[in-house]
Image 1 (tube, rainbow over the protein chains, first blue to last red):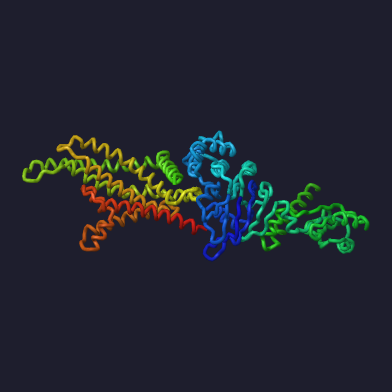
Image 2 (spheres, rainbow over the protein chains, first blue to last red; image 1 turned 120 degrees about the vertical axis):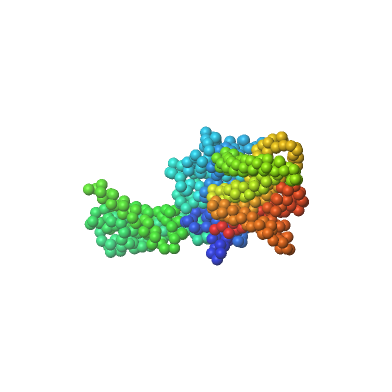
Length: 337
Length: 262
């Protein structure tokens, strides 16, 4: 449904995006994930026909966005970062206007407007002036204008930005409900959002695509190692000697987090690739008379994958994850006292 | 093609509607009526006083005072609209840019020139609407004049005013498409209007080939011709050229804006 090939957009001397290629199957929700300034909005705008790419092609529903611009534009519903609304109009009046300029025939208009109102939960507000709506409602009107003409392709640029948690859940549900009938491509910098609603995630960084896959597969794809967090009452050298014999074990290091009690030792063990070595570790420890007090597998979350892919400096990952761990141990310690 | 006209109509209706559902349109109309009414009264009393003074002198040629009133009033209106029009045109594109709705229009199956044409038609229609009461009440007020006035020069004069307004609004629309700041758009259009007056002043005060050229491009000169009752096709062509130039430049500037935007 969407086929993007080698899109490049150059502003002055800097490239906003470079050789971006991907495709989206009909009925799929594709998440475009990346930190701010990675080129998400630029890509969205090119797809929507708002900006021309410097080089490359993008086909939507069979129409190339540059050479067949008007036809391609008829096939898309587009929600820009700021929902494009006329504050002095009513929701219904605005949707009727959008339906008209998108070429919905006069006979189909009432049905289409009702459909959009219903999908976005706006039926009881249809006569309200847009000016009087809260941000969450405005966002919904923004989505309603993107689906009112029943486009095969829907492009949503940061659809949940600036909403409160309840509204975010509502909007996500709404987007999920669009899949199947429509092909959706949405951009976000919030990772759980992408993994929650998208069938596929494409991660973009500095204008280049770094990974694209199903959310679950992204991690195996990237061969993120599994690590274990254990707590024992022994010394580091002894434990290390015992554990180093285990196949596929990569490193044994003293964990940065504090042990539950001062006379204990907390270690971080990593394996090679995605090998599961938890059982081997516990067997070896028990056999040597130092059964662990605690053992926990730390699975790299999609968040870690994302950070690893999108930040050059890996120390940032630690900086981000460390305070959280410390907070947890501290609060545990408080309860103890 | 049918779709294009349907789109032009949709945008035209939406634009026109926005003048009537916001206080903005009424405010502009009110101020315009107040100022023009004020000038009409002054001119009327001046001319009446003059006619009483002159009427007693049989040596002077007879003057058609009703006709004189129409012409002078049209000339004054030509000056008054120069201050009203920039206020009408300043929001045409700046608002769309500020609200992000330009992105909606630009990603809809509609061309830039169609958007510009629709917007210009809407604002000209609005201007025509606020002009209508003035023309109507003038026709009624002067129907009792003796000798009876012919409506033709009056209607040509107002037609000229409408053309002048359309040309200025068209250029003002172009200026408003260059910025997302309303004040800048208004000041820019005032500057343009000032330039037009300046061109007119130059063409009035000097003679020579340069002046000839200037008087051909002077909008106010062409307007003056129509007010005088000189209906020349070259005047109409000049107005229409300005209108088309404005639409063309607007479409180009929106296109360029899309190319540059980071």
